[in-house]
Length: 341
Image (cartoon, rainbow, N blue to C red; front, side, top):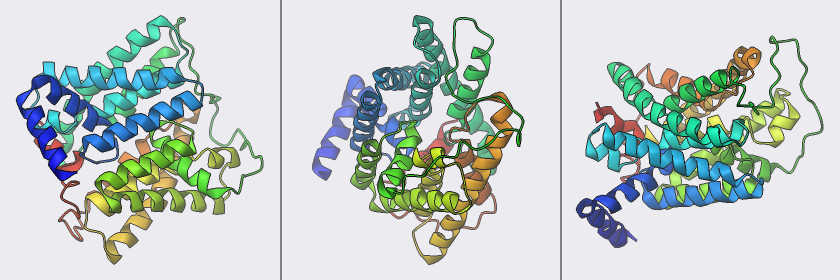
């Protein structure tokens, strides 16, 4: 496998088209903070499966369009090639491309909206990385979050778009939880917590994503499971909304936090694991608080809680074990994006 990877890398170095394809494949992997084209390919398969399973293949198409447009925009803006090749300008536009057809009705103008959003996401990535570099941080998926929030809020003012978030605008405390009975078939619920990283409600998608993580880092796969299980059980314990629990909506932000803090930013160990478990709980609380803030606007939290929590966990600069645990993880979005500007 390593020999094949080296040959692929050399081919990408010598052929601009292959290099562009390689960068695009790494983009979906970098959502999970992995720098591996095979991981990215499996993520694409996972998203395609979930989109078709849910009867919305346009979601997969939107993700691919966003990925291509975002990466091409970075190329046109002449970003540094090493960062481009690692997929660091593809992952946020990929998520934006998934979000737009997920939350807007299917009309021809939606695709133009998506393209403009993907271009904007790349520009926002450059801007935010410049700002966060001051504190030794990276923007993670916040360019996707901010761009998608703007696109959805703007869409409310256009007659030609219908926002499909299924969220009713109301002040916090005015509404009631949907209630309903929680399905105690927990393993599919945990897997859906993984799949919701890509806004997909499918346990099969979640399983494929875990396989994609295993391809690159066993520790990342393990901490993804810990994040999904920990946040879901904690939300269940505190009496969170049953319908949202069943869809895995309380697990996906914690999945990303657990991967970042437990497997990518630190070498796994006892203290790191405890810090990660605290981060999982904090992510859940930040998610619910942010949901209350955004309820009057009727827009989803997306991966905002992951970004906020991970920044908070990094700013104290408690470097328990600064050496990354896995050679193939160390050149992920966390380290490499610092050199993009």
